[in-house]
Image (cartoon, rainbow, N blue to C red; front, side, top):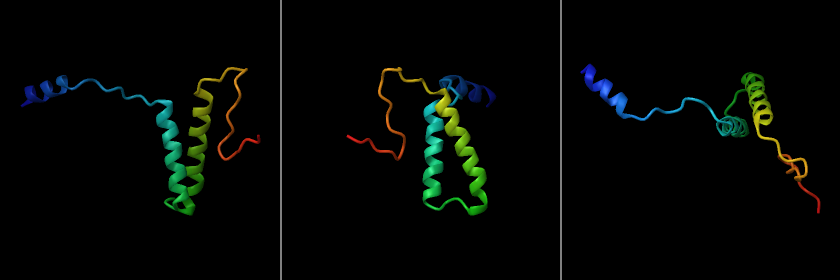
Length: 82
């Protein structure tokens, strides 16, 4: 039985266990949706909010910077005036 287990493990391709920036951004979005839908209790809000802020700052700092000449996209919730 040990041989079968080892063979099955070898047959499966190695999956990368790292996280990408899009994974972390997805976690921020999940936290936002959960809070909007009332899934987080009041006593949990500060801890969850602090985690969300840390994740969001990390994603922003690790994201590739846009070129200086490129026009910056409006921040979430902001609109452009034309």
